[in-house]
Length: 365
Image: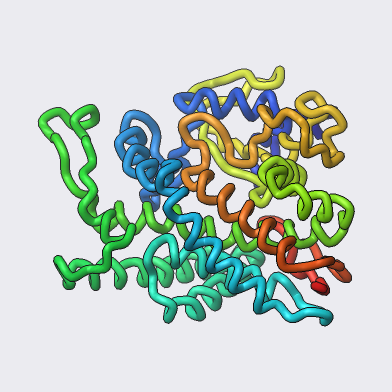
């Protein structure tokens, strides 16, 4: 499609952008390619456009600074090390069902300050959400989403009721953050977020992270198992891990597509897209574009990653990208430090729109 029809149209996806250059053009012009694609629910901050997006994104970014990540790193490492040590040795294990989901949930709960008693309900929720997504059952997807919102509302309510005795965690911090709305609403200065805004922001951090981070765990194990020489190189040179992770994610992007809505007529890739059109950004295609990456379908961890769009770009770049990079680096480091070899026996691809693999059967030694 990149070569024959780089800007394609169909009733299901609207206008699909396949070229890296065209995707970057869309990301660089949020005033033309709106992120406000749903009128049913607010989506803080990624479903907002400027100027509304700016103050809410500022709240978001306070929690993903280098200082926060450095402080959180030992906690992530402790959790990942514990999970990796618990993996059975010398026998088949399905990474997706027996490791990946728990890995995603445990790190999320540690970051947000959520209790361990939520682990199993959230793992079960992930399964329900995956099944509904595969069926494209909008009614069931909505029901499952409301269930997750209920978890968040309960956590917020408990912290409000606890007052000064509330846990000193990110979820509690968010209750007291002040948004500067003076640039949006004349006469309105600062206020705390409404419950609807809080639930939306936390949902944006957590729902997407659970599915994509779980998918990433399968992608990582599959890659290491099928590339034993590279796995050994990284064992011996752990400082090379960040570059390797970026390249693995480029080749097997854990998020296939995102949506936009045009606010005016615009020409992209030699084709005019009318105002009010649905646009699908195809991350997987953009990250394998031969014009953006030499030998685009091959693994080269030393390559320039300026065109890598795994985390997007522009004002809507992935809100949790610093955390994702940190937890994936630690996952690779701990997997390789605790094993002599990883053998992948079976893999099964997920079906779009679910990402990654539905099964990765591996043996650890």
